[in-house]
Length: 487
Image (cartoon, rainbow, N blue to C red; front, side, top):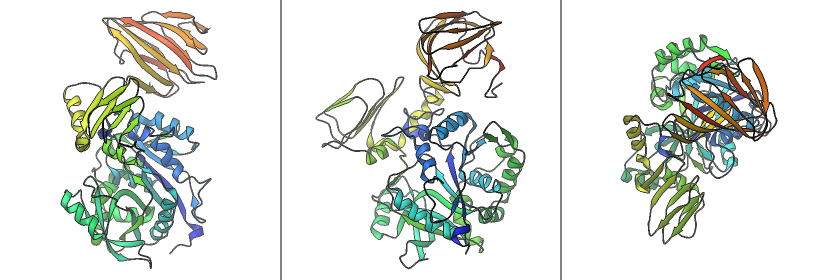
């Protein structure tokens, strides 16, 4: 076993999930891991801080900069949230398409200069409330991973949950049985089976947290899924690095088989005798917040079991989950309901059906709607915009440009724009002219004019934009110059 003081740890954050069961709060372009639940930090930010090299030495192990793997569409949001969390030097790998957890971990292993580095893989959309229990489990798992084990953290079950997979504990690996061999993995059971598992007490929830050395993972994946390793190696070798991002080669990664760590390796390790599967038990207030019922489970409740997030009013109601972004939501004489209000959508369902919300998302896709894609407020690398009103041949937006940021130099073929500054200082480029606007000042951008909006100040720039023309789609844009390489 490698001495503890020589172990190097790289936190690997999987930030590619869609969070469809938390619609309408979670959207494809702004998914669950980027949302905050109960305080200002998002789930991604909490995950990044969970193993912070400045705060947590894990008894002498050297913690290196984290590696984040995400969808390329979320790259600027992930980078911004990492900087806000004080994690400015993380490496962000961009997946051209989602290929599940096994290829993601394989890419992370290929990226290590030292094959003895231990990877601590954490989904970015889970919540862990009691970090001391997490650190205790990680310390134990890292020591096993630096030997010949691939380790998963087993979550102490607190109810007969049918939405999680289960791990059956095998032979103990320590005197206190805090670590065991994995005897079997079981996919999501029915209610009676889940109750049986809970009664037996020899099972943990499978929380998707894995600890493994880069060398052991590459050896296992090469033996058990060689085509996956070949595709990932080709995608990594053909990578393109730009700004703070590492973009994997698209064709090779798209050709990679899509599979989870469990299916690709963990359930087949008995076919590869050099490495064994171990589970370290963890009791740390874990939740995957996988549904609105899961959110209700972890939140503080009133005396009638109601959770109210935002502006909610309940009368003679029990065990309800209410979330409001903008409007008052009132509930009278109801029980066990989920009511979620956003600026453009409202969800009402029974808590018992919370796992099925993704059916609504599928129906939206089938109907060629866009409420599953984004909120009315759409985030961009320079800030955000929000649609305020629209009608025949016009649209009104509120633009927020972050300090020091600027939009691309661009033009439109079908629309003109009026800009009115309501806060901050705007630097405007319009063809050959460059000038500034202060609050209550405005300008006009004709159809075809080459233009740019920038914020040279140190406070957010707020602009009301009125578009007019025969076509107002977001694809009516020709970029000439862009600091974010979106040309």
